[in-house]
Image 1: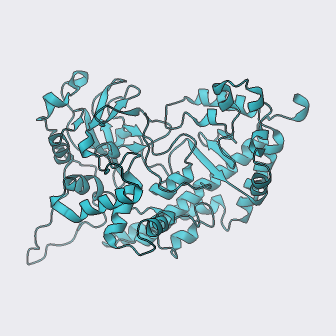
Image 2: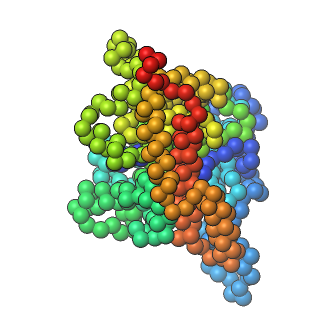
Length: 480
C-alpha cells in the first residue's frame, strides 16, 4: 500500500527543488558503526540512542540573535530546539522503530530531511510507526481529525504528541505555503493569474465552512489546519515518517501497514551512504506540480507535471465528455479490454498537460501509463526518452497544435517574460538578504520570491511544451 500526503479538497486545475543530494548535508547524529549489519529490531534496540553531532554547516535562522552584542542584564534563558536524538528517544519510548543508520540532514539555510548515514539495502525496514503514535481518532471525519490535532496542541506539554509537535512541527523554516499568504499580498499578485491563483485559500475556506459552520479561525485552529495540510497522510499524522522529503523521480521507499495498524517504511531500492530517503507527497498523475506548490509551498524537482485549461478546451470538455480519448491514434477501443493496454491509451486528465523530465525532455498530454511511475519508482533518462518517443508517435498532431497555441497564448499574455523573471529572482533575493543581515524577517518579500520562482518554473514548462510541439514528430491522419 502506498500512502500520500493528504490534500483536503480535490480541484480540477492544478516546482525550485525542495530537496537535493544529501552529500551536501550535515548530519544531526552519528551513523552506526555496524554498517549493513546494524538493522535494528524494535525489541532489541530500544535503548540505543544516536549520538548528537555538530551541525557545522547549519546557518542561524532569521529569528536567531546572530551577531547581536550581549546586553548588560542577562535575558531569561530561552528553550533550546530539540535534537534529533531526543525525538528518536521519544519515538522509541512509545514503541517506534527507526533504523540506526537513519539520521537527519540539513542543507544550509533551507530544509531538512532523513538521510542514510550508511548503506541500506532494498527491502530493509527503515521506520515503523506504531498505531498508538498515529494521530487520527478512529472513525473520525476530516474535521474531527483536525480538531483532534487542535486539542493536542492546546494540551501543550501534557499531550502525548508534545515532543512530536516540538521537533517535527515547530522547527521548520519560516517559509509560508500559499494558504498562509495574505489574500491581497504582493505574493498573490506575483502569480500573475497562473494557477493556483484564486485557489490558494481553498483549505481555509473549506475548514471555516465545513468545520466551523462559517465562523472564523483562531491561531490554534490555523496551526492545526496547517499541520494537517502539510504533514498528514491518508491515515493521519505519522511521526518520523513525515520527516521524509518529496521527490517523484528519486523516491526510494514504499509503505505498508501490518495487522496491528502500524505503518512501515521499507526501502524500495538500495540507498547509498549520504543519500536522502525520499517519499512522495503526490498520487501518480493525480496531483500536479501546481498542487504540490499550492499545498506545500515549493516547486518540486523533476519530473514535474504541469496542467492548465483554456476556454476552448473547457468548451470541448463540456460538450464532449470523451473528447480527451480522441487525442491518440490508438485508444481504448483498440485495447481489447486488456487493463494494461487501456492505461496506455487513457489520458491522464481532461486538461492540457506537459510532463517535464528535465530542461529539454518532456511528454505532451501524457497517458496514465506514462505517469503511473511518478512517486512509485525510478526511470533512467534513456527509459524516459524511449517511452516518450513511443507516446508521441501515437498522439494526434491536431491536438499538439492546440496545446502549443494555448501555451503560446498564455506566455504572450503574461506581464513579464522568462528572461525578465530570471533577472528579477536574484535581485529580490539580494534585497531579502540585506534585510536579514540587520536582523529583520520580511515574510512578505519571502512569499513574493516564492511566487516569482514558481511562475518562472511554470513559464519554462510552457515554453518547453511549445518547443517539443515544434520539433517532435506526431501522428497525422495519413499515417493510419
